[in-house]
Image 1 (cartoon, rainbow, N blue to C red):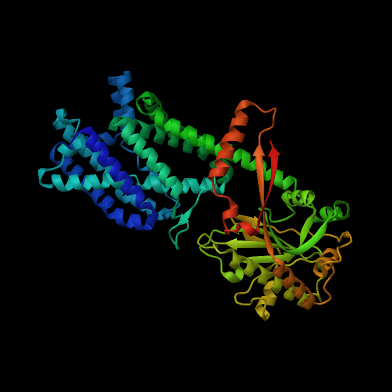
Image 2 (cartoon, helix red, strand yellow; image 1 turned 90 degrees about the horizontal axis):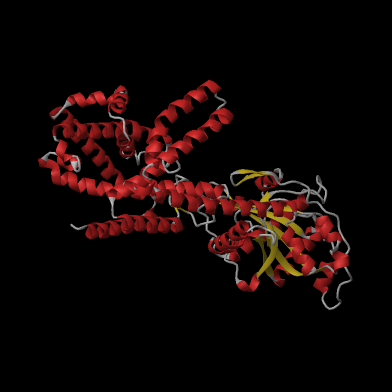
Length: 589
């Protein structure tokens, strides 16, 4: 077969491999695991046979003294460069430990200790024993060392193992991207969870196809196994060095290890890794540059995204305003309350977002009922419907303002906005009923976190619901503790004289307090019939005019492009355009 035919077959195999990823790690692993297991048993057995058949004295190579004697006898640049080839003998094994999100720690430890490590030792030692007796067969020692009786079965198994060898790296890439997303260091991409049992078994379509394009580009561009090996070796040795240095703060700050143990770990690790690093650096011009270019590109993407995202969040946190101040400006702005319900989406679990004050400053009117909605994703498969919403009141009753935290698991689907509106509205109605029952022990300014009960629809109140209503406003959301503070209580502000043409508008603008729970429920239902509007904020980050050229390119072009390409929060509920109000503002950094 010519090189072009080999490359074409490899590209076809890559396309097939990446096309299977959407089935999930567990299903792909179930298909590929027997092949890999059979492959390791095969190379270990062949290695043991070659050691016994040709030269069992090769086992002395396990003594580290021989590497010292090797360099002392034949010291030159070629010998030092040969360490880069030695590095390739362990590449791929590190991907096992990058799959910690996909597989249990114990499974990886057992697989590496009992299967991978001993089989690799036997395989390479057996090839060394064969080469000692057949020095002219160095170029293709592996296939020549296989006994003739099992040559073709071994060829098939080796080809199949080569196809699935990159599965661990693909799965590890998904895990790394997910961790970067959790830290706010990567643009938002769609994550598909493929397992109900294991949270870490995921599939990222966008990253999957990017990997496919990169693999095809490297395969078709190099057409050379040694250059691809140099690129892989450079990446692995740098990963080892970075991991070693990152272990230092972990040992000092997390494990509280003694400094003597830390120094011992660093010295022993660097004694092994630095020589390999220097040997691989010498091969940058022979393919190693590819790893550095790809790493630099991803580093720039992650750095720019993280920098701009942090600046944007700090702006939203520092610029949030008190509701008392906003409503206090009502008369001077001509602030009126118009019929309807406004769902204001915000990433803040407490306080009033600046985007809301920006909206009423430019359009001095707010809806009769305002609900601040904060969507949080929990690291669970699904959140039961009866535990999905946490609702509380902001300020006195006559303001008709609420805050809702909507909690979703990673497999919860919320494609129909009508269901979301209905569930949220019924939860508010239920909260009003529950609040009226608790008025004997709480004042109007108190706030409650009340989960919606499945099937209540604002109906009968059970004793368990009453007990749930007495829970604190603090809850655990997402990956950290979400503390819902009680600083949202506000004081009423007078509104301008209402128009006489609308009784509902008059009641809304005056902020008339409901004398009974029935009056407020009737008021909420009338507002619901008047219409629901979804208000989404869109803070655009721009570089200041006096910023440097690099910062302008990074913020105005790179970050802006990634924001347009990534998935926005507005697509979560598929809000129809006729009820969507997108409020934008520009923040200069």
